Length: 157
Image (tube, rainbow, N blue to C red):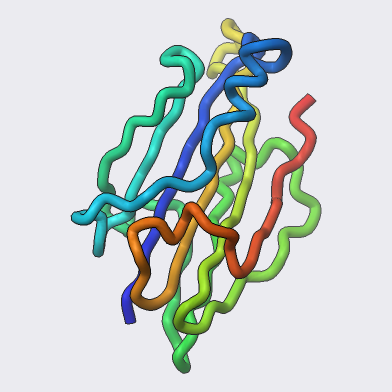
């Protein structure tokens, strides 16, 4: 069965934590139309504070996306991975994996906060949005309301 993955990463610093910069960051899309050639690769979109949150897209092998995808019994099990290095904010208990049947899709959001290796620079923040569809889809599938929405964002302080 066809699996479509879109991975959106938004990156910012404390400069975009308030005011107009935060408004621009919060206005960044969490779903994009798919390029025709995005299948069977993941459609990866990056937006960074330095560029005013302009989206840049590329393609990535599904094995390089931090998400577990397993097909069994006509369903797709979806579960984003959280690496311990990027586990801030603390996640006491993660929600269970989502199981999709053909025709469904999930939007799963996680956020992270981390400092530079030596603590010389300030905190950097990430928001990862994983849009995953199971079965054939139109190019604008991720512009609509998801079948399942998991909000695993935590306080970033």
